[in-house]
Image (cartoon, rainbow, N blue to C red; front, side, top):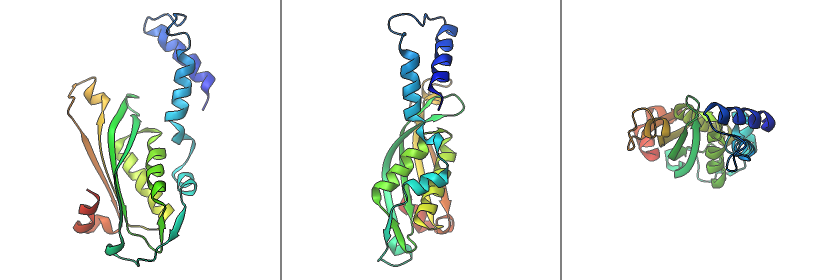
Length: 187
């Protein structure tokens, strides 16, 4: 990420909106924004495959294959930025479920995968797909379900300004596409 270029453009943005970038409160803003963007958009530096490798620590699954051995993690909190308006997507809750096929992911890795995939300019629909693809590769299973619920400031703070609107998206792969019992596990 080119922090110097971000600083330069943020200074131009400050001027463009009619503010003085040399004003006391704004003098260090371009640098702060560059640092913030490097942190909150860290995921842009990695492909889904690289994230799967980064957080792909697994353990042998001794419970056997099948629906009885599904792993479900709910209410993983993430935030992201909408690629259409660069607006915050917040109060996002991610539910992930997968059927182990010989190995299971470390539980913290599931939350880390969700967090890193969210650290990109995103669409909520793509975020669910990215998480499902990464979990599938890291856990070595085609059977993954992801449900995301979240608020979008492009809906709540501007435009229609509907403060209570939530968006729910689902991504189902493998057995989760056709098995209603599995879909219920992840909701």
